[in-house]
Amino acid sequence: MASKNLQNIILLYKIILICGLCLVYSKAELQRFEHPIKPDGSLSILVVGDWGRRGAYNQTEVAAQMAKIGDQVDPDFIISTGDNFYEDGLTGVDDPAFEESFSNIYLGPSLQKQWYNVLGNHDYRGDVLAQLDPILRKKDSKWLCLRSFILNTDVAEFFFIDTTPFVDKYFNNPKDHKYDWRGVLPREEYLFNLLKDLDTALKESSLDWKIVVGHHTLRSAGKHGITFELEERLLPVLQENNVDLYVNGHDHCLEHISSPDSPLQFLTSGGGSKAWRGNVRPWSPEELKLYYDGQGFMTMKLTKYDVYIQFYDVFGNILHQWSRSKGLYFV
Ligand SMILES: [Zn+2]
Image 1 (cartoon, rainbow, N blue to C red):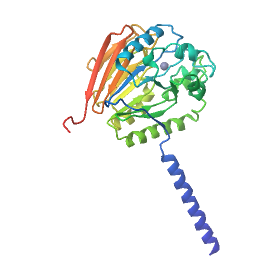
Image 2 (cartoon, helix red, strand yellow):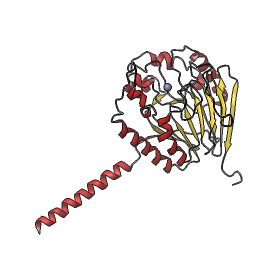
Image 3 (cartoon, rainbow, N blue to C red):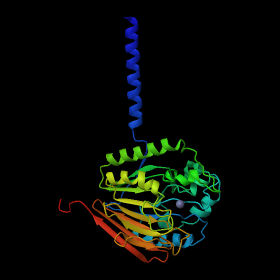
Image 4 (cartoon, rainbow, N blue to C red):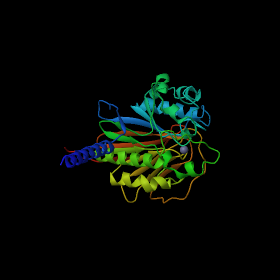
């Protein structure tokens, strides 16, 4: 009888332990940040990607134009779509490239806002932990880079996703490059948890506008084209959860592709410095709303009911604009 009671107690402990583990596992792990909107209920953002070249390849000129347009649109914050430091990320927290490619380049008063950065494949070729290190925030308070995180505002929720670990070739065929996978391995577990956490967070989101930001392309007529690993694993999560915009870099161009089968829009802002002139693949003209193979950046204005996108070239010309409304205006 005593041994039967003991067995029951052990069984009870096992059930409690398993339930506890389930609770830990089911909790979304993505760190959250809050950013206030303007008193008029709007939010204004600049988006730039693929930039860090110590000012070369027109990085300085793009930065100057961002500052000018920034004076007009008064950005609340700035999004960087990754490949922050070429060619091989940062060598450490003391790498002068941080100042030479970031702090000393984006000098305009309108750019002295919070920058929310994701990592690109080139960032993984250096000391990947350096870009995530809070020491960089002490050096320049506008810098913030995490692998994956959520940014809450009163009009939209932004989900920043670390896309580089999805791509097989960086693991299977890295060529002469060395990738810093600290914090990512075991890879499958990392990707599984990331997708699960994103899915959970998207399902919990009560805001109308859901915007996902990553480095790699989901749809692109550029040099890199479609990232098939993301198309297979990330795209279904975005479609199932009614994500409005997927914003990325990686292809060094400005691009807008619409979806034939969902409201999801694909926006590439990867024109922060070196561009790939003439490198464009055929794409359905009904879907390809903009392809610009030069330098530039994107602006986004959001209210509870509207989103308004503009793409600018390095001279400040508007290349393309797009807007969408939802909600009821008469309530
Ligand atoms: Zn890239």
